[in-house]
Picture 1 (cartoon, rainbow, N blue to C red):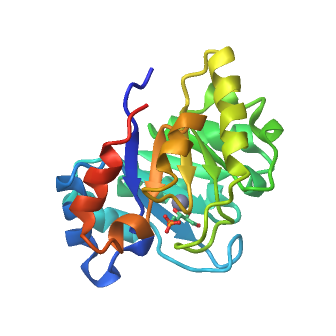
Picture 2: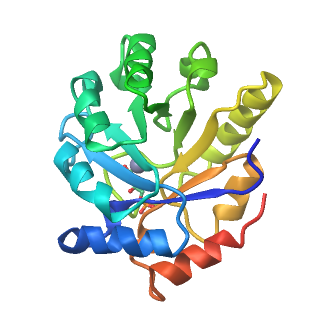
Length: 221
Ligand code: DX5
Ligand code: ZN
């Protein structure tokens, strides 16, 4: 069981022209994961990057690369991301009619498997798969863009998921993604979130990446 929170800076808000350096900076500043948002322009209305970017970033950090696939038919890309150095691959339940099979494929590649839920998706969608995944990602904004406001109703959903995980003794990590700031991070942790994805509030922080991560690090479970 985890006794400290994990911080996962999202490179979506980084300077893409200096991506390697920004990842190295976040690593040095004490990040736990590097969160990589892959968007296909179909599942979400935005396009970001694919597996070659993950392969390039691999040499800039020893941290686990936490790949969040916001794509339709994510099973088409899983192997490419695994080969490129992803350590965790998370797929959206809304994009996977055969979620069980998709999760097995990720695990067979030796990668940790995560499932993500959009704000309007019910926890019942992960009810059956829960014991088989390494991570459950609760979206606290509608995916597609960085810098959106945290949806407050998510807190109650996080609490419910925390209770479900604890009562069933499922050890999956509970990751929360979207709109997390120094002002709301404590309430997310109090509700049961243990991995905090932070984009804008780290890479666009006035005081810099390192200071932003240090402040978030002070939040205790
Ligand atoms: C949103 C992405 C998030 C995003 C978070 O679709 O999945 O990971 O980068 O960015 P902030 O922290 O700015 O909301
Ligand atoms: Zn994300």
